[in-house]
Image (tube, rainbow, N blue to C red):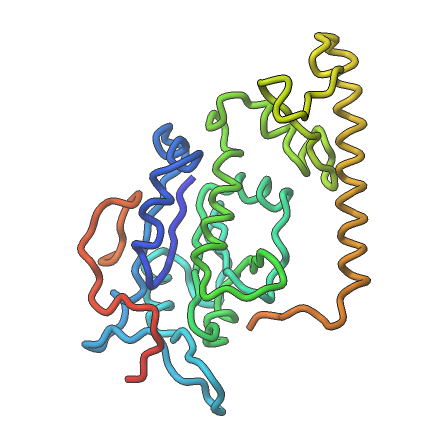
Length: 270
């Protein structure tokens, strides 16, 4: 799978790409991550990528020009469907809240193009012009789309064939085949058998694999029930609704590169 990430902070992803299952997926040739710096597609000497919103109001917006130019270079056409096998992903609070089944679906694409927003949001022409799959991590606001992009990549990378050491691991994860789409994994223990007065359930130490599997099924259902009760409790306690959200630069696989002039997390006024 190839993933193209568009961001104004390309170095944000350096360490992320060098660790965990993402690193394993890259080493095994299952994942090729390429970073595009949107500032390289700005045409003024200040490399401006943001502008004030029409109608006034706080904050700045990501301008359409650098984004459109960058997407031109990546093969997305304005007003057209994405090339076959390509999944354009827009990090957006208006998007569908990400679930495990979405990650399963996304991991089947040959290529992703991820746009990471910043500032107060996107110029709406960016949203309207392309066949985005809009994705949100939840009903809260972050400063940009880089963290959500990393979460999605992390979740999908471990689903790619051959990445996990034991292929059954993903099937037995929460929200997957063993638990069901709404289910949770059972609780786990490791050695020592006793620690600070707390022990491991006797059935897990019995060696009876049939009894262990039955216990795990029951415990998985209990975990799901506890979670459901917690979610319902939070909804009842909530007094108010939650927040709603408002090429030359390409670097392959997190390779070292020169620091980008003007790479600061501030709103520009040029």
